[in-house]
Length: 272
Ligand SMILES: [Mg+2]
Image (cartoon, rainbow, N blue to C red):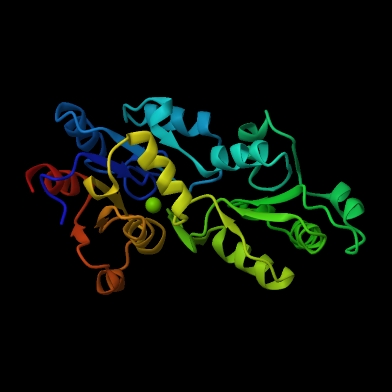
């Protein structure tokens, strides 16, 4: 159970700290409280519609005082994966995310890919299709181009396995269903670089330098946040804001807690 044993916190962003570009109620105070208590924390997001730099700026404008290094995004993890594997990225991502791939070999998926992958008999294992929340750019044309690349042997990198996210207009499709579509169509398995992928949590744990059992995750997504973090050995708190649905409370893993909002979650962490 979260309590005095918590030495560090990992916060989700959307629906926990930010609602669109506005701070969630209590978010500014919650981070300030962590600062005062000398509790280190990181922000771990599956939001893949804007670059690391843009998101950091939005957080600062919302009054959330964090450093660039405290913000971990799947796109940065994907760029590092491409560099480490000497692979060329075929990006099926929102245009706002392109800046995160400026320093690696990558290009938007499109017409040229149709040409490059017109023959499924040719193998291109040095290519990787990168799928984020592309929103309205998930066109039939782009998905078919991605499918052809996968059939030709490209790897599939998933920036988010989340099924949906919460916006002012209601629940909206995230990248997860589109990753599943491509997996089924091409008969491949994706490499998860966002939550709930274990690698993303391990990266955060390593950066904090604290044992997983002494870190508490605060998130609004039962699957990507709470179940993913729990599988990685973290303590977890599901906040009843953002995309939270009452039925989520019935599926909490052992030891997970509920909190009305992020300030209440930080109170629970600091007071035990
Ligand atoms: Mg969220």
